[in-house]
Every structure is written in structure tokens, then in C-alpha cells.
Length: 199
Image (cartoon, rainbow, N blue to C red; front, side, top):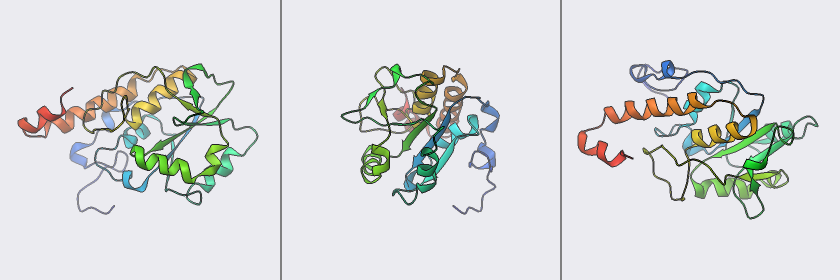
């Protein structure tokens, strides 16, 4: 999205509010991809850009249909790839039971719940992959954006929890980056508006 402001190319925020110094890189044996709805790509409260700062290998595919995600579909068809989709369905299983012996590529959907369900519905290639949900996810600490779903997580929180479960790595840097960003945004709000976003 074009802008006259001086933007940081890494975090995609105005240079005066760059949060790159808050982020620390995390290494993982897992591959991770995100199917991102176009509406989320430049949404000011989207947390995916924060996750990318900590996880440079995280791949993001923007779109809605199978054509948009064809490159990822082909990648998942490789024999050495053991992909799974993190999305709750009637037949999904608890991710808490999975190890890297079973999967080595996590796929997330970054969208509102209604639009995430649409992406899931129209991409039948996803239905052929193992599908998992969270059963013991921590309570969301992301209070800048409301969700219509009980126990909903930000995209960063979902990625962090999935990564900690399957690869057993320390994801504190992800949560710390989100917290620092939230505090920065709250500090710029008028006092009466700040109260709306308190835990």
C-alpha cells in the first residue's frame, strides 16, 4: 500500500513507530505458512507482521482461492513434506497430541472467523490434509482487536502456541513483541480510549 510516510520495510510500520528492536529471531525445525485474506494484509491491528519479524522463514500467501495458493499446494504435495492445517472442524484433532514425527509444516489461516471459514470451504485441497485445533491454548493477551469467537487468539498467538506444541521451542520472543507493540499503540491513544483496550 503506497504511503508518503517514511516506512520501515521490515515491520511495515512508520519509521517513528518501528518495533524491530523489540523482536528477536526464533529458529525452528518446522516450516510454517499462512493463508492470509487480502483484507488483513494492511490491517493496522493485524499481528502477522510481528510474527514475521521473529520468524523470518514464515511464508505468507495472500488470497482466497486455490489459484492464489497453488504454489503452497504444490509444495505440500512433495513426499518429504508432512503438512497439517490449524483450523477447527468437526473432524479436527487436538494439536496438543502431535509431534514433529507426524507433521513438519504448519498451515494457518489469517482472517476474521467468517472469512477464514470461507477460505477453508473454497480450498478443497486443504480438506485432504490433517486438520488440528487447540484444546488448551492460553487466554489471549491481545486486547486491541475484538473477536467474535470465544477463546480466540491473535494470529501471532496461534502461531506461537502451535510452534511451542509441535517443536517445543521457546516462543517468549513472539509474545514479548506483541506486548511491546500493544503498549506502543496504547501509549498513543487518548486516555479515555486507552481504557477500552485494557485487559
